[in-house]
Length: 297
Image 1 (cartoon, rainbow, N blue to C red):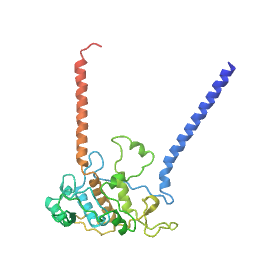
Image 2: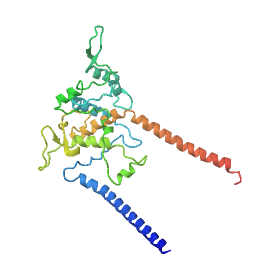
Image 3: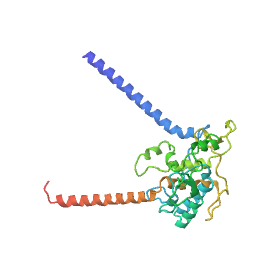
């Protein structure tokens, strides 16, 4: 009996130790989540991207047509010198849910570009004015040409860039991001817009290598892309502010549409399905009550 009591005491002590270690590990994990934002703002760590207000955010969100038009203008006059949008065809610019340019505007825009076509009857390739069915041609013929022109750096394609970028929002907001209907879906656009505005002079104790620039939101605070935007660089015809902040938000919204051109249709379908399921659930409930109300239990 004494042996049994000793064995029980040892098991109880072991259980308490395991429980203590588990609580300690959980507390350490919680503290790391709480400390992560503070670490990101101190030293030379990259800053957390600024949370912007987007017209397309949320279940009822829609693209701002004027903003998409301005964003395309910023891309065309600034970003297109280095970055491609390989998945965008000129005709997409006139389709519902996007900038919705007129067909005449799209034809004129496409004709201002040259695309490589062929072979012709002689077996040779040639250049011709682009048509609405053509994709927007890239600024460089291939990756090697891009790296040669950009001192070894390779500008990424912007077709789905805002969907491929993001950041962790930290504790406790990341818990809500795992809940359907409450999750925050604009991490990528927040990151890109903040990055475009994040250029500044480096801290006095930080040395930036030649050919790189300091950016508060870039990992390591170093980026190979020169500051692409400056106040007044692009002229707006609708009276919108011609500032770096406005340019960054407009071109990022345009990038979001390029990455997800059917966003509005997807949300309409989702809301319709949810509405149908709610009505269907109500019909099932009242049907069940009608059928079983007179049945003895």
